Image 1 (cartoon, one colour):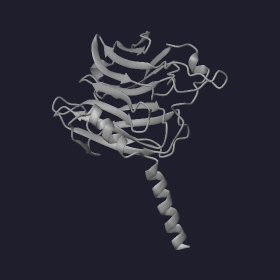
Image 2: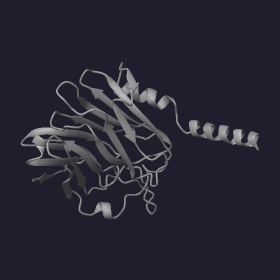
Image 3: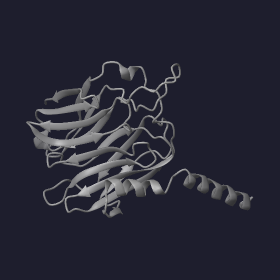
Image 4: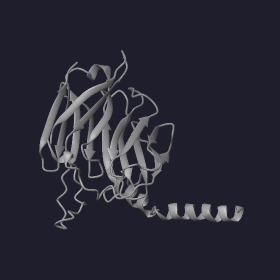
Length: 254
């Protein structure tokens, strides 16, 4: 019995390892971070996700900075990378002093069993990453729901929580199919062109708080949770632009 258990354990580990191409990250890092040393460092950034996704087309991801933004030390950028996805760089977030806390939550598509990464750049020029393994498949080629194709451009921007003198947590949602271009129409056997939100800009009074460059790995009806410094809570606005250059904006006022 013990021998059988050892064999099954070894087989499971072999199948799991075989599901991830070890060369993927090397190619991605050379293309996106040429010549950069990236440390795996849980004291700088953490990444939270279910080990097995309930729905590969809508996988919640949470990235948390382990220290608050300050003038002395702050995170300037975070890249969300899904190694085995057709377009692995799912998002690139850039933060300013108006963000208060470099945390992000969103939902992504997962194409196959993969490592996902949050790579953070700190203002001292160092790079740090958190890594998770997720079991999911078929998310990138999943068909878009009918509901997501209705009311494109409708935005909700609202506050989830706020404490006096602390960064406030907000959420921005936009109605958009975020079609990856990889889902086959089962009747025509054709592929619709990719139609996705490619950028988000959050600002107040013309001052940028956080920006995001996005790609097809973000789920339909994109939504993002982020922080803003207390000084940035008034006259806050968000603008989304998709790959057809259509733009939509919304304002949040206290």
